[in-house]
Length: 437
Image 1 (tube, one colour):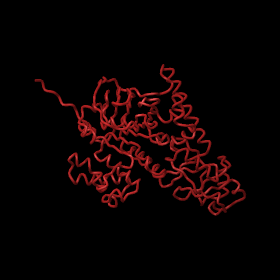
Image 2: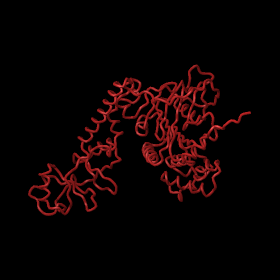
Image 3: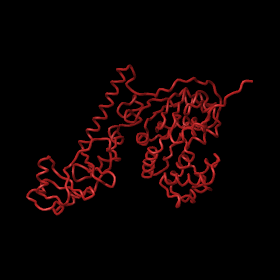
């Protein structure tokens, strides 16, 4: 009899890949039907999830987004279709082996209450046969990665942690074996708004460092817009209504369903998508506390500024000085009298969003807000004109994209990502339970 070549495994792919980077996921004509229901929970879904991106499944309860995600790691078996992970057929993998190389994070962390933090994180590495020293080093590395001191937290039990700390441990556990893929099922849904936003920021920071392929399920529009490199807006049966970047969904929604789902605040939400570091900053006239007031007045007249920003010896913002305050003044700028309106209490950073910049502008005494970099070094200022220009550029970009698509004979709206060609496997059985959320 001819010898059969065993199918490559995801474990081998992870080993070849170093476990460090994400891999693409392809869903090809995937369906899921349950015995007693006339409608499919997932109906002929085809999409490609690019390597190293966060793709958000966004839709109302019951649309099939969680079912779709759980078919990727075979917690739910598809009725038909193929799912390829890094080019490998998920059906050809042993379910347990597959899941050990796909991280999984759920709401309220799902930690084992009778195990310490370290023991919870160590579960998958132990199953993979890692030695104790390697496991201990990995646990400590991951705790530091998610912002928890290993000395302080490794021996605690889940009941001794806050909700946010439990969720951080849940993320650490999902990353323990350095999987290329991370599935996150509404992981921050049960947290208070402040903790939730903090963990969203933490996830984005981790993704910058790790570049995993992350599938994230949510029904929260703002969360999807903040986290997703791409967002798949789903209707009943996991039908893709639009699959595009957050910016495109806001500026070019694919019909009334998307418009109603994202709501009428698209202009304000656009501000959340753009970082201050992405826009051209304006510059105020700079001064030091030791500069002569008369010299500064002449410079402001030459450069056309209404006010100057006074910096300390480390280039950190101290206060504003207006042209009016310099009239007839002499001596060092630092010795000029000043009121509350001159003190700089509010600054933003390059990582701040334009929405945060607008909020700072509304609360500032001046019509401009300083932007600082590392060690609070001054880098420029943001004004309302800066924000208006950024919005105009975003809208012009989308208008140009629509024109280019139409000129190329494509739809003006991006609805679904094109998958790589592959054969469909029909009529596969397998009826694991699961919700259709």
